[in-house]
Length: 259
Image 1: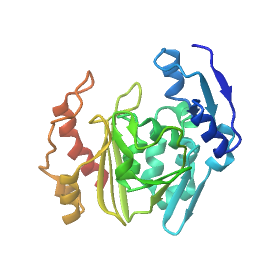
Image 2: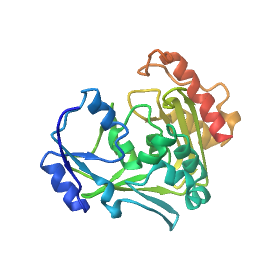
Image 3: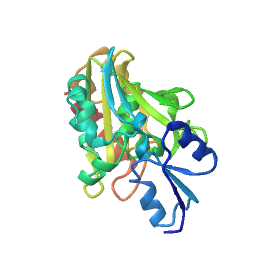
Image 4: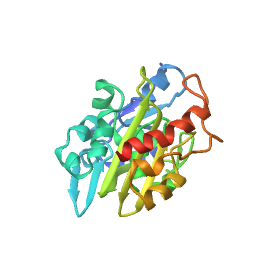
C-alpha cells in the first residue's frame, strides 16, 4: 500500500474541507482499504469520519427512521427501534457480510460506494428514502446513477438517511456464499410512496422492478407474482449466474419478500 496523509476531521465541515482539498473520505473502509491494498485506489490523503459524533445514531419520530451516515450495520441490526419500525431494514443490516464487516461497515459508506451487489441501496430505493448531505437532500430515485456512481458531487458528505416507515416491507437475498454479497437481492415495501420493489445484484446498479410493483399495487400477495417475469436485457452475467438466471430469481425473491 502506498504512503498517504491520514486526517481525522472533528466535524462535518472539516471533513468537507478535507474532501474539497482532495482527501478521500473514509467511512468503514470495507471497500476502500481493500481497493488500496490491491492498488486499485491510491489516494494521497484519507479523511477518517469516525470521530464525527454528528454522523452517528438512530432516531425514530414522526413516521421516519433517521440513521446517521457513520452508523454501522451491526448497530442498525441490533436496534430495537429499527426492528419495531421497519423490521425488514434491521433484517437486511444483519445479513450484510460477516461479523467483522457489520461492525466496521457503515450505511453512508455503502451508499457512497454504490456497489452493484450491495444490500443497503435496495433498502434505500425500496423504501423511497432520502439521503441527507452537508449541502442538500437527495431522493433515493435520483441518487443511484450507475455502476459505482451516485448523484454526490465532489466533496459532498452524506450525513444521514431518512426512511419513511411503511405499512409492510420485506427483504430477500440470494447471496454469494463466500462474500455474502447479493447475487440477487429484492426489497419490497408498501407505504407512503406506494408500492416499491428494488433489486440489487442483478444489474450494474440497484433499480426498481416497475412491472412487479404494478402487480403488487393491485394485489399485495405472493400469489400476484406467480408467472411474473423480468427481462434479462442489461442484467449481469458472471461466474455466479447468467443474466437469465438473475432475471428468473427476481420475481421469486420478490414473492418471498412479500410473504
